[in-house]
Image (cartoon, rainbow, N blue to C red; front, top):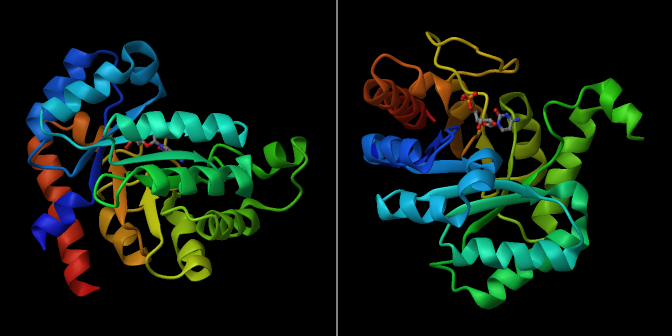
Length: 242
Ligand code: C5P
C-alpha cells in the first residue's frame, strides 16, 4: 500500500533552474511518484528540464495547460508525448473537438505503454464567480466543473486536474476510472500558504483523488524527505480504509 500511495504523490518542481530541479529529483525520486514541471521552469529551460528529470529516474507531469485550436494542441501534445512525459494537460474550455482530436492522435501514435495520460483543466480555481461573469460565464463553477469533466471524459481524456472541493462532484459525474489529480493539499500541520481550498492528503484520497500534487509542504519542510514520507503514509492509511 505504501508503494501504491507513493506512486500517487506528485511533487511540484516550482523552481527556477534545472540544477535546482535536479537536486530535488535526486532527493525525492524514491519518495514520490512523479515530478510536475510547469510553465516557469519549462519556459526558462525547455525540454531539457524534462530530459534531466527523467535522466535522474523521475517521471514527469508536464503542466503546460494547452489552450488553442485543435490542430495546434494536437501537434504540441504529440511533442509532449515524444518527450516521454507520464502525463500532461490542456484546457477543457478549448472544446470537445480539440480534446477529442488530441486524445485520438495520441492513441494513434503511441502504444498504451508509452502513451502519456491526458488530463483536462476545467475552470481555473483562481476564477471567482465575478471573474466568470466578466468573461460571459454566468453559471457557478460548481455547475461548470463537472460538466467540463464529463465533456473531457466523453472526448477520450484520461482525467482532470481539480481542487479538493471539486473531487466529489466530478467523481459522481464521471464515475470510477476517470483520473482526478488534486493540488491544494496540505497536511494538517503544514501552513496553508496561498492555497485557500485545502484538504489534507487523507481527505483528498477519501474524496476520490487518484494523484495529489504537493509543493511547498515538502519543499519548505525542515526535512523534505520526512515530509514526503509522512504524506505517503497518510495517503496509504486512507487507501487502506477506503
Ligand atoms: O506549493 P503547493 O503545494 O501549493 O503547489 C501546488 C502546485 O499545484 C503548484 O505548482 C501550483 O501551481 C499547482 N496548482 C494549484 N492549484 C491549482 C492548479 C495548480 O496549486 N488549482
